[in-house]
Image 1 (cartoon, rainbow, N blue to C red):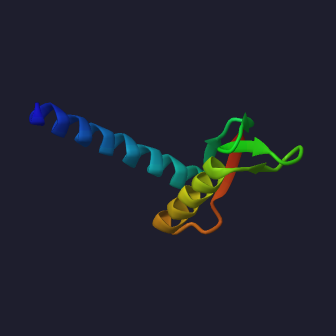
Image 2: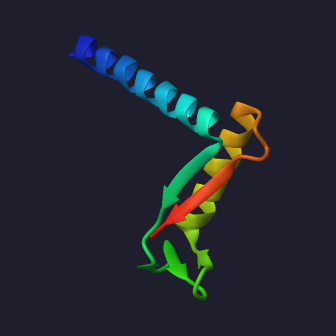
Length: 79
């Protein structure tokens, strides 16, 4: 069982690396949220999402910006 778990974690690391490479190459990251999942995410106007999941996602995007050393990384949001 440990061999399988180790193999899966290595495969997952490769997928994550490919995703970060794609984000770095395009200069864009896409995130999504549900628009009516109070208190996790909901709309506070036509274009303003708020909630715990939205805050967490913004923190993750900020971390990706730091790791890639791309402070101007654009964030696309979809619902």
